[in-house]
Length: 218
Image 1 (tube, one colour):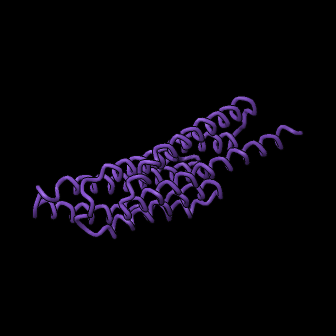
Image 2 (tube, rainbow, N blue to C red):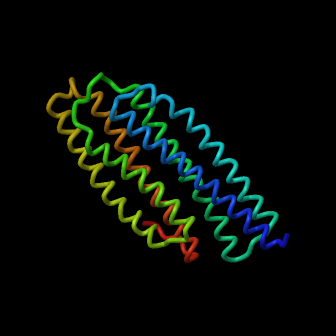
Image 3 (tube, one colour):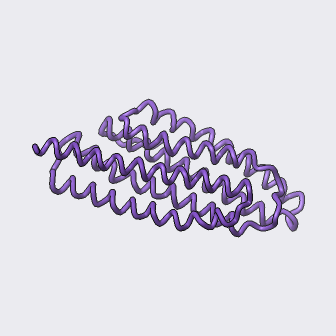
């Protein structure tokens, strides 16, 4: 097998594993949102175990990247593609961390009923899953336009976070003794979802770097 063919095959395997890691984190976010909406403490608690699998993916992909860089000694665009994957797995791993953090918050949620409807938090969870999947797909498909769309979606995520924040602050002002503990916990859930959006933007920044060779912050 030629060195070029071997490199291409190993890069394809790396990308396949990257997609698997992404799908696992997206599923975690969906389950964290479901656990939140149904106040399913057990489901929320279970995400910590799944996060260990995400960490294993991160370590394995990191090793694959290093093997490609050291053994194959890729040049120019090939080098940039592998180094981009190496950089973005940190953000993909954070997707899983944030989902597990939300699960922990659900598991310890104060009260047995919610102090407000969770339609905006539900929408944030749905948007987070979309941003996660599309951010990684933008790299896999070399699609800078898709990366730009994800970056634009982060404005929508930020607006929903501010809406949730305003609603919860209002509830605390109305009756902090009754609403305070749960409001603070729900605020943390919203913040974790907003951070997932930020990490998706980071992945898209690396996608654009892979295409242009210029790393631009958005």
